[in-house]
Image (cartoon, rainbow, N blue to C red; front, side, top):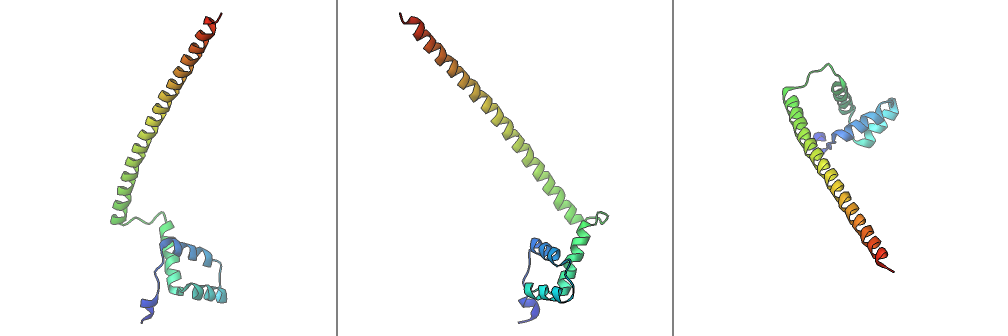
Amino acid sequence: MSEQGMRQRFRTSQQMSMVAKSWSLKGEDLGRFLRENGISSVELESWRQQMQDGMDDNKPLEPSTKKRLEQRIRLLEEELKRAQGIIELQKKAQKILAEEEARKAVAKLEKNSSKRSKKP
């Protein structure tokens, strides 16, 4: 099997974690880290560059990335509006329930009060 076929794929979060952990390592320590994690120095450097590029505010987004992010923003805004609507309904329901509980409490007090006033 070729080296490329054996190489495992890492999620972006794993890549970021490895870049962070390796940042201050040099020489033998870095080599040991790379071997233990099954990555090459070329991969690590590529991930570092990708992270750096991602943090560069001056780098324009690719059109496909921009479109995907704009779509995601629209979906999140719609979800936020729905959530805000649900919160408002819950507030109204709580108010109605509180008013109903208050009416019941007043009615109970009035009932108890009228029973006491009827006793000789």
